[in-house]
Every structure is written in C-alpha cells, then in structure tokens.
Length: 97
Image 1 (cartoon, rainbow, N blue to C red):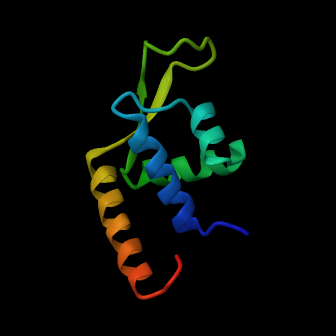
Image 2 (cartoon, rainbow, N blue to C red):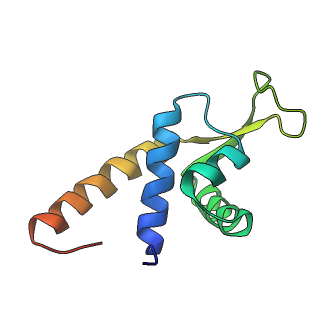
C-alpha cells in the first residue's frame, strides 16, 4: 500500500520529533522513514521551503560524510500538533488519511 503524501509528512514529523533537539542526519531519516534518498530529499526540501524543518550544523555527529542534522522548527512542531489533531478528528469519523 502506498502512503499518501500527508502520511509521509506525518511520518517524518514523528521521526524528527522523537529524535529530539539534535535532529537526525539525512541517512538516518531516510532509513527510519523507509524512503529512497530522492524521495526523502524532495520532501525535506518542501518542508524546508515551508519553514517547517531546517538543517543545522551538528559537530556532535560521528560521521565523516555529514555534519548536519534535520530538525523541526517551532512552526514544524506546531504543524505536527495540528496534523495529529486533524488525523485524530478524521479517524473519529472512520476516515483514513
């Protein structure tokens, strides 16, 4: 079953929220979301353009190829809350998102 774009975004929001303030590297996000690199990059670019996520430099990474992390912005955290409320509301009426 294919996931809708809304569910893909919701999945990425959940993954980033559970990662905490340090965020996740692109490879870890790609693996946890079970997406191809191309699809994950496309979604992250869309979310960055909307101001919902940002990419930060993270010197704590132990990876020689990437020293940046994707994090939820304040707007992204608020959007995730509203998305969760909407999904709960829709499911209360028997709708699947």
